[in-house]
Length: 462
Ligand SMILES: Nc1ncnc2c1ncn2[C@@H]1O[C@H](COP(=O)(O)OP(=O)(O)OP(=O)(O)O)[C@@H](O)[C@H]1O
Image 1 (cartoon, rainbow, N blue to C red):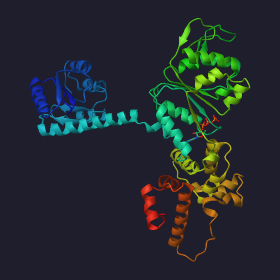
Image 2 (cartoon, helix red, strand yellow; image 1 turned 180 degrees about the horizontal axis):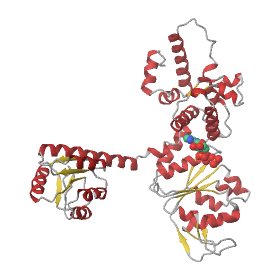
Image 3 (cartoon, rainbow, N blue to C red; image 1 turned 30 degrees about the vertical axis):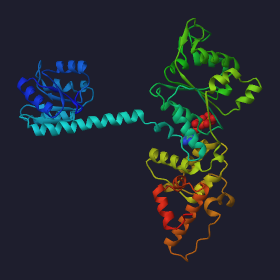
Image 4 (tube, rainbow, N blue to C red; image 1 turned 30 degrees about the horizontal axis):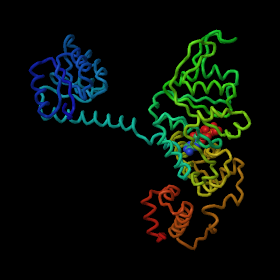
């Protein structure tokens, strides 16, 4: 097969087919010529999807250009170039408005034909490349878990390594630290990505309903079961089942779940036939499962079945360096969502950096969103934070910057003061990251190259 591309030429004039087909073959294209739309669709079935279709509009059996135009979508989305008989300009324009890529008028100039065809094939190639990249890009999912700390980087690299496998994963860590974000990323980057991701909050469903929610039931299985019901497990078939707060699953249900994990099969409530499913199980908890096992509230055998690989998240106060990048990420999301810009003052950034954030990233995000909601002209400063009654004591203003901050005096030019501030911030960022330039650049919102230039300019290299 020629790798220049496969062209399907549809025209009812044998002489034209011969001539144009010959030119195109000389140019290195693989060409199939047919005389009607029926034959064209037949050829598509037997010879596969063309990269390009050259289509005469006046074709048997109807010789009706409108009818021919209606067949365009059946060529599977590849570019269609219309061949017009006698300078039918109107018709050609109409064809383009209906999705044709281009048109070319008879008598055809071979050089013109070659140009038009090459341009259309380049489009096909590009589109296929984009599709391929979208399907295979390994980073798309894990990049949603934001952070530059060692802990966040470890989490991302684990996601990338285990997502393509079917290994079971247990995500542990404090509430609001992104356990669900991780679980979704694992699914999005897996071969199951196009199948469902079904999330079950094991503690939120009353114990007596959980079995029927998960496994489904048959009509008449219990009072109120007035029709068959498909369970969440079946809905997740082929995809991922996310068992959130697995530590809260009632013990009798744990026994039933164990069977599913061991055998891949279960009974719907009230049913006699076994159901089989193929799901990947990801579980998450902020509870200490070892302690629950010791107190008899969690089955040890189930623990070993769900554990597979353990991904552990850290409380936000243990990785403060993640706060600026998380804020940047959430602000960008707000900007996209609200189509407006936000500006975070340095002092506000410091305030965000220092809070204990017991509710972790969830609390950070909610707080930012509340403050942004009242930010006049998008300015987020300590004033807005104070208006919402958050504590803004002078200590909470300390930090990166202000511990060394002097009162503003107009003894230096603005440029000099800006430079002084830049030097302080760069030094502080380098100290905070143990002189890691990539991380420092991220903290400062600069490119690595940009940071290196500034370090050289100010003579800050050690
Ligand atoms: N590293 C992160 N990157 C981006 N967003 C994050 C990150 N961590 C948490 N979030 C955001 O914080 C919020 C809480 O995250 P998530 O629900 O995944 O936490 P969780 O650990 O599953 O919480 P819980 O234990 O309470 O269920 C979500 O809005 C999520 O998008």
